[in-house]
Image (cartoon, rainbow, N blue to C red; front, top):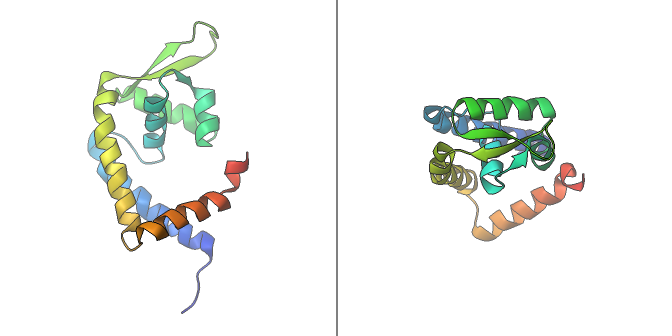
Length: 140
């Protein structure tokens, strides 16, 4: 059996994961492209600003700005002017965002189960460790 390059396998898995999430999130008006990642981080850290989101999630500023705008337009978050830095906004989940949180966690758990269904618990833990070790962005 021919071995595919690791990057290609990771890319294929990511595309499958994104297709699943895009389909599952569509009824909630949350697009693919990582919007769910931004929402999760805002739910974890209410009051976070866009610069911190960009750094934490390792996206570029333009992607962060687009995702924040889309989440705000969909009613999941609100931007509040930072009283200490009037050039910056703090991001908070709305009631809609808070109510959606358990649904989002369920969807992400289902996706995780789909991706790891052929692996044992030990293999899943080992895969997580190896992928974390390989991720060059974790060093930055």
